[in-house]
Image (cartoon, rainbow, N blue to C red; front, side, top):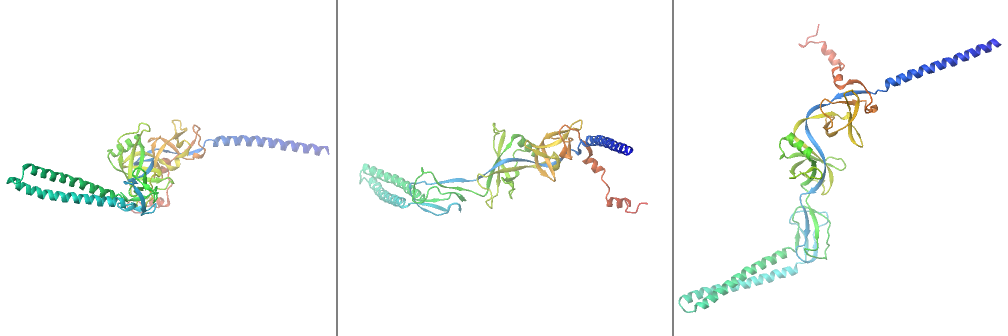
Length: 401
């Protein structure tokens, strides 16, 4: 019985020792494995330059080519309105009527005065012709002739004065009909029918033209100089695109056809303006969005794969390898995407090495394990079935011996 108890105790001690040895061994092995796995596996690629169209993006604001405040040019009561708010009107279209009777009577009075002075002038011209013949025969005194001449000249001046008054009366009468000076969309009516209006009462409504539309935007002087360097001329028109605040791209392309004559000293930007067709009225006065301006010519610029770029609150960044092949978080500026690549405008140059895959566990300044670069992958590409078949034949199309 004692022998059995001793045997059981020995077996238990042996099991406990074995478990301790196993735990120690597995812990060391796990530590070694984790140490070996601590360096993340990454893929690296060198930054290359490709000839591309330069592009820059900037905040933009839509503005109408024409914005007209329609005002009353005479005084009177507003009697009629011939449109609805928001209507599209054509230049010359009747908008309002100011009570016309007073101005119509003024026209009639001016016309009567003009007709009277013309009749008087005609009488004195005939009399002057008679007096001229009589004075030559000494039938009348020279002073009588001079008096008749003065009367004729006075009525000639009166006719000229009354003609001006008549034209002015007609002009004022025409202002009783307030017409649209330009094509465009009418805004809110500020003064309704029945109110007394005059030139000092403020505008009745506004008209904003819709097609074409202007889009103004500030471009940094650095980017503007870069565009001019690529195109070789500062006086070129350039293609632009407009993005709404929602991020949607406007269907029509525009043309940057104006630049300001100075750089803003406060912001370091130059104001540019583009003209867009707006046949569907999608561009609205005062709207804000983004503009993309393109160079006319291509120039070499660094490009990197889209998947290599990450973003945080500070902006876009990549992991660039330093001289010891340690990754360093590097902020960059990009243009637009082309064929799955970002155009880099600042932060990288040709020849820089960046991490393109395995970015999830990369920490700036911590070692990484480079398994293969993009270039190496291209060189060690596994042959396809077509490559194997091709090897069976020589260049002349005959089966290789």
